[in-house]
Image (cartoon, rainbow, N blue to C red):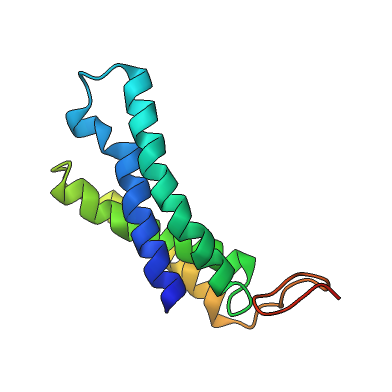
Length: 126
């Protein structure tokens, strides 16, 4: 659960880093938008890296990526509707539903574990 919580928090920072300047930063020079976005993204990395470290072993790398993408979409829907004041169209909902089906298939069946010789949290190299 800590993995998902950290991924949610990291995605909030990353969404603001990537898209926050679209609402208020139009008058900024591009270099300033990039520097501010990188500063915000640093916080995102400080949360995403531990999330993936803690989660690896409980989840495969593929599953971690799929969790991250689903979290990204949920965070972005909230961001786009509340911060950017955009409406969610039916075709976006259908696309998100298909991604939800993809996530179901990623978790509904037993996935192979990490490759031999891979460091798992609390583990070591063979």
